[in-house]
Length: 473
Image (cartoon, rainbow, N blue to C red; front, side, top):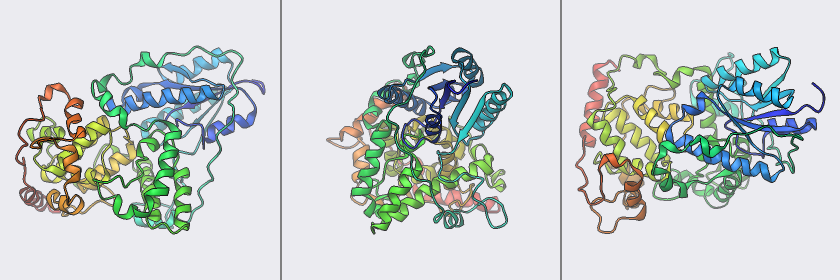
């Protein structure tokens, strides 16, 4: 290896040029940089919507790199083998990447780092997907936090690194290695006809993410305390889509929120708390990875969840045909936009796990397939919080009433009118788009009758409480 050997910059869920510690570290060496992305088993295992959205993000990143005199080299197969082949082809002496925290990625990255170092190749991972590394935030006794509020109190005054600049140019090698073609990967194949419905709602790339953040801070953060709970209005940042793929960093969002708080904008601190809630989800995923696969509270293991995904009630929930308007509107919003309002997510999840007594894993898996803003830690945390089986969870006896919740957060029914077509003389374009997005095999049409509730709000609550009492909760 010599001082001019190239550095492989391994992109994963960090699809940006700005505030990119691994890229900046590579630039500081003055050596040629070869950005790469490897389609490995973890990519292939993604659900339909996240995989399609990843493909869009990679295409945009490739264009951004091209504007800086660089390129994105695509390879598929086992990550270590693909990287070793690229090292052999390019003479690269180092591999840099941004850290991941979910167990499969951690296992892969440890193996890659160990193999590269054993072969005499420099291998470095960098922080940046989070504001605080999970192992750096500790209780007074040196343990990890299990409750959000003490976690927030610990980190709220901790310094968050300043965001790094966007480079002017990214120097490349004299000879570029060959690259596979993104279109050949067909990452959007499983989306089928839903892709063309969802595409107009995507805000693609870091420039769009920065514009979203700026618009939120300028026009919405002051009323965020109320706006974040009102699904009929655009009162949130909508940045989950971009944070999930690293098109923007939490550090960039944090500093914008801090400035807004110092300017006296009312909802800014609440926005910061939401960023820290995301950190808390990663903190728990790191320290208790069982949150992804099993009940975080192990005393829930004996609870008799319905685990049958083919159950008629579950199918009605998936189709947005439960007869409970708040639930159905949320599900339909997801099929048309690829995302769902946070208040709706709570109602949708509560209805599945409490009114229908169906396992939260069913919902976790369905969201993993349908959300363009899917995030492993946030998805698991949200579902277990709603079900009552997770850390800092909503108490088991708190069963959201989706009817009274609708009266509280969508009093004029603007939200449900936007997303539900049945029974309306002139349905909205968004409501009709639902029928273009869903599988044809569902056989649904806007002129069909809207269903009666499969489980009424009061009946479901009584059924849930009886089940909890019988289990000794």
